[in-house]
Structures are given as structure tokens and as C-alpha cells.
Image (cartoon, rainbow, N blue to C red; front, side, top):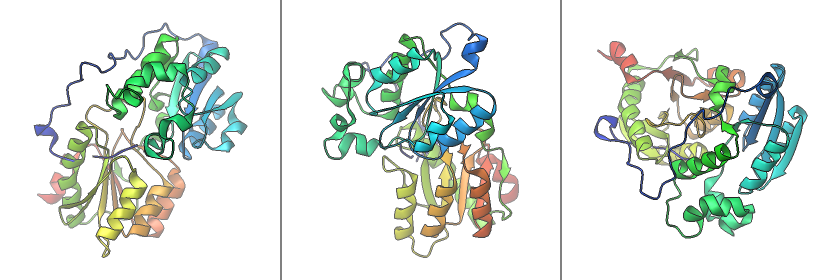
Length: 325
């Protein structure tokens, strides 16, 4: 979806607008039965992440009911699904009916949505087959423009609608916790002193951009911000950074928003991220431990080692202080 910058100590999370959807309770329903525990719904967007989640859940004995989003989801998901159906991104009522029809009371959102394509390409949101439920809950963002189209606004409205139908929206990290990056340097190569300074400099800026709901990632070189991620996503951010800094050597810093809802849009890196960094001339990826998903883990780390890239996972910039003292 997006990416961010500014010191979190000076930024408060933006106050919700009067027209914003109501706050969503995370666990309003009773404890799932054993049968419900074994049945999980996935609303699958783009990327290998939904496939990796599905593979792991099936290995754990789960039955998967998958809503595959047209133009986004990977056809390989079918091999892991007990039930699967393809829907337009905005056929939200259809998503809920399909999940309920197959006895799903818990669902997780996995994968990327190309928000720019949904809103601003071609026919825009109309091309994604909005149904009456979508128009009811998102009409303020898409039709009347009485509400903003920020990620938090849209996803909160969708989650509220699912909960109203008795479907609890789980953090993807609840059902696939092993995909979270642990703390430490994950590659053979360690960051240099200069690279550590860049990480420390950029960390609070990235968090500040997240607090403003701009995005999750920035690129930094010599304690100078090269580029900030917004609606275009991390891959485009890296390509732009390579053009702005043809000499290379920059660092990508990707962190969760201070107000991050772990049910959706969790910061994620994978093999494609590392490949994009290498192609653009970058040398470092710094991510937030315990709040960033690392997909295609073995392939991503092997590729990073092969190309001399540093991937470091930190609880926060203070972890670098002793090395910079």
C-alpha cells in the first residue's frame, strides 16, 4: 500500500475525523469451537505471502476458505484451499457471504492491494465491481468523498462490516507468527558504522511518516533522505531511489506505523524486495523486529548474502547506540 517520515516524539497519531468509522473491537465473539479453529478464511491479495501463509496453515492441518482477489491473488492458492472463489476486490458483500456459507468465523487479510490501480487507473474503483455492501461502507471514500481514502479509514470500515456479520478479523501474525522477523542481523554481512548512522537517522523519520499514514519506508544515504514511499509501494520507491542516487550505497528503512493495526498492511519484505534493492544499487535493509513479515525467507537471505546486502532487524534505533557511542 504505502510508506512514511518525521520524529515520532513530536508527532501524535492523527485524531480520527468525525466521519471516520467507529473503533473496531478485535475479539467481540465467543471462543471458537474446535471445528472453527481448524477452519480459517483468507482474503488473498498480491504476492507470494498469501501462498506461503496458506502452505503453512495446511501443514498445520487447517482447512482454508480463500477469497482470491481478481488481478491480485496467485492461482497457486487453489491447491491449498478447501474452498476458493475469485472475486473483484470491491465485492465485499460477496466475500462475506462466501466465507459465512462455508462456516468461517475467523479471517485474515494477506497480500498487497494495488491501491493506486483501484482508485486512479482506468475506470478506477468502478472496474473492481463494487457491490451494494461496498457502496454502503465505502461510499463516503469513493463516491461522495465525504471521508478520506486513507488505509486506516478504508480497512477499519471493512473490518467493522466483517465483524457485524460474525466474522472476526485476525492479525495475520496470529496465524503465521513464524513469518515475523526476529531481532538481529539476518545476513552474513554486518552494517558499517556509516550505514548504522543512516539507519539511526532514518528510523524516527520513517516512524513519523507512518504516524501520518503516509507509508512505511524511506531510503537514506549519508543521513539524507533520498525518497519516501507513498501509494506507489516499496518496489517503485527502490527504483526511484536508484535513479536519484546512481552511485548506490543507500539504505532502505521499513518500519510499522506507531499506530499499526497488525490485522492488515503489516510491513513486509521478501525476495523481490532484496532483488529490487540490488538492482537499484542499495546495500542495506533495516526492518522492525517482531512487526515486519519476512517472506521467501531462505531465498531472500541467500540472495542478500550472494550480493553483499545487509538485512538487519531491530527493536528500535537504540539497539545501534552502543556501536555508535
